[in-house]
Length: 438
Image (cartoon, rainbow, N blue to C red; front, side):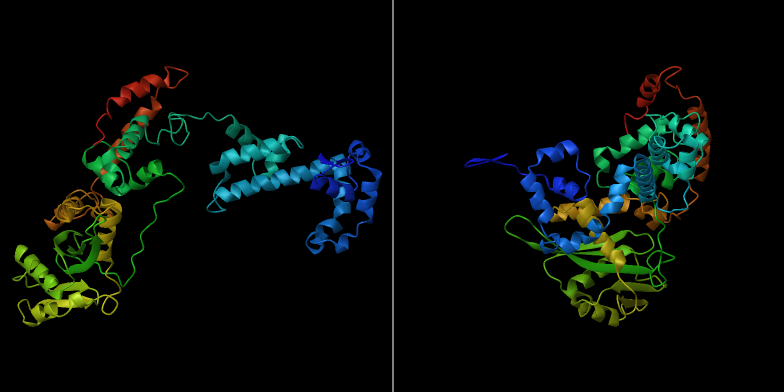
């Protein structure tokens, strides 16, 4: 109520005026509105009011809305149609492919059928949702296991990871040493320490936070893929500037092998001189005795000035005549192998923070990159292990994974259900095996 001199004046809700024009306003409420106000609303020319063109289509269908509102049977039918639409919309919003089976979205089906059951019987409601009433009751009465991340009973679906394996994964993902580390590295760490044996896709499924799926990497034809060590050597320079005064710029160059993905050597310089790149390669060739290597060696770099001048002069002097240069964007598509090192350094290792001790941080990074990370292409080998002669084998852990699958089925079939022995005993018994996730 708004108070004015000489009386009071009401402020009406906008929907009251809409319902008045639709002739569906409640009679008791209509009698409380003054006669003069109602006459004013009737005489007001709606065509002259602002926004009439935008709501004209809605006002033209007011008679249809009035008919639906007054007929109880028609109103119930329209509510049922709306619930059907909400049910299908909820299912389709979760589906990645419409062809996927509805049992993967049982919760949405049960919810939609339960709403439709207020207006039609269960058989008709289930048929509307492209299901059966048997499936509806099976989904509705299905036992949900709180211990399983997938919500499925361990005994009825013994192929899933056991409670012990789930706790191993959770403990490893929550360990401070694995924060910011790629999931593939955590996976291969568990495999090599014999704490877990499962496929990489299964590991991703139990560690995902959303609907992320392990996507198959597509290798373009232009991408360089070496078949031996020292076939392609990638080099590039990145810039790191200290965050505290004095702000010092450090130019860091890495030489990376394409096949093993190992960092062969690195240099920290104060400028982007081509002489620094030349001295870096001289150290690499001396360290790994590449000068006497009769096989072809290609240096992959970009077209920057640091990769010209002294570097080209060193190659032209035929100190190592079997070495040639490949320029990214001209001879090859890109120098992504070096760019990946910069990304790992800044986002995974340093995490956006530049330390004051650049030399110590880069030395620790090279050790981490070569000895602690596990690239997917190496199937459980580190970069240094491949550099020393290890051959990546995708079937390296196949027998262990198959053996663990048989043990997993036995564990799940003998899982202590709450109705029999209680789940707490199973949790206590398995916690002893995961005290040391690393």
